[in-house]
Image (cartoon, rainbow over all chains, first blue to last red; front, top):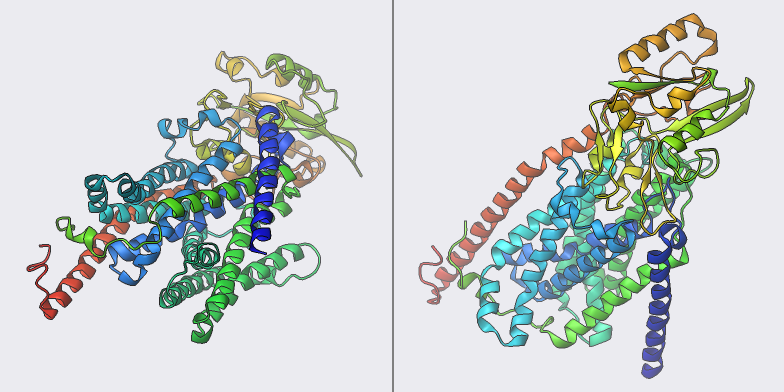
Amino acid sequence: MRLLRALFWRLAALAILAAGSYATAVRFSRGLGAATNLSDRMPWGLWIGFDVLCGVGLSAGGFALAAAVYILHLERFRAVVRPAVLTAFLGYLLVILALVYDLGRPWNIWRAAVLWNPRSVMFEVAWCVMLYTAVLALELSPLLWEKLGWPRAARAARGAIVPLAAAGFVLSTLHQSSLGGLYLILPAKLHPLWYSPWLPWLFWLSAVAAGLAMVIFESGLSARAFGRALERDVLEDLAKAMAVFLALYLFLRFWDLGSRGQWEAAGRFSGPGAFEAGMFWLETLLLAGPAALALSARLRRHPQRLFALAAAAVGGFLLQRLNVSTTGLEAATGARYFPSWMEISITLMLVTLGVAAFRLAVRHLAVFEQAPQGEEVESRPAYA
Amino acid sequence: MRALLLDVTRCAGCGACLAACAEANELPQACGEGPAEGKFTVLRKLVGRRGEVYYRRLCMQCLDPACVSVCPVGALRKTPEGPVVYDPSICMGCRYCLQACPYDAPRYEWNSPAPRLSKCSFCAERIRSGGLPACAEVCPTGATTCGEREALLALARARLEAAPGSYVPRIYGEREAGGTSVLYLSPVPFRLLGLPENLPEEPLPRLTQRVLAQVPPLSGAAALVMAGLWWLTNRRREVQRAERGDPARPGGGR
């Protein structure tokens, strides 16, 4: 039975890689039009809405937990930092790879670093993503130095962990919120259920909540794959933190809808606007449900149910990002968008590559072993 | 600053502007009705109570263009003479310009492996040397007029006054999102021409400028808060250690 299951997953991965490779060839030889369902009215699709917006958001556990452990000295989360930072690093690599697919002229990608347009939100996001990916690499580098047997390099990298975590927090806060800021320039295009001057803050709060949910979710996955799960009280604390950030998000979301007088749009269940209202409620329920249920101590103590709660919250987060990036634009632009099978297969291929890379790292690097306690802080002079 | 006045009531749909545009800008195909890829302007037809109405759509050449503000590499630029120009050699193809344009004006070469933006260049070279854009030069009916923006606004107002019954009583582009260099007079509601009527009067780039202005103070504040919290929680740990009589770190890190 185990063997059969392993065989099934191998075959599925092979099929995804084959479809993805074919789609890659089409995309780069015949252009975006041949491979995607994008159009002038819907110029951003699955690769931006899912791979970039969701990929960056789900990686937020890395900066949130690094800040919690290295800055706030919340020692109980130490066991999760390494897997969370590894997830974030792989997540950002996949985001950059997805951009290479999505950009029409990817050979010019480096120009964003050289030609400055400080009026552009995307320019700011590009710089933050670039710098933060470097920060994540440095945060992870001790794993590699340990493996290579270079203790001095490992110690040097660990010595810098506090400023690195602080830089990671600042850079992440900026670009997580700015991804929402990208849509501020579409006041007439984005549906009022999603267009809000608070989009940057809504993106930041939901990213932190989803990043934490993702850590819980991954712990469940790795328990099945590697037989390694987080301790129950750590999972419980993560669930509490997730619920707090979800509650803050929902509070801001509801207050904002009220202050803009858009509750009426959420209540349109027939005629034009019904589709948007339905998507809004689906997204809201998927986020509010886990927030409310995570308050129950009995549920929190049950790893399987916690896993399901985290999965629902991740689903709500994905829906929120996709609603902002596609659903909310359809009415005003008159475009209908659903990704082509080639777009989907390339996204699936990138996710598969990410999972494979994570497995490889877990097998060869000390990802799930706890970093020696307190060492980072002791080996460096006072900060601040 | 140069501008164009498009008077929809005067357009006969002859298509002379389309041929002239394609020739002047060395486009592979004549600008026309069908799919707009690789074309700088399109001519469309409405059939309604007033009979056939022909109208042209092209880049509005905004005074403070959203596309220029969002381009991360500055491949789009508003020239002082009026045209918004595009440089494909530095464009990385993020398509934020297509997303940000409130008029749905830029078109993309979706079927090219090295795609460019297709948008009206307002014949920037001709304008710089004091000439007229190709479309305005050939228009036989005066449906497309080129001139200084202030003069064209005055002309448009005069036409509205002279024949109030034949126009929607408003100049589109005078104030929309901070104003445009392409102005419309129309006998039918502007939204039928695909021009949005829910735009704020404020230039759209201001919406993102407000947020970007917060970036430096916000990063400074976040860094300070991080440093403060690190110091505070570290201090608390040291005190706890000292109270336990832990000899490992006498005096702590200070």
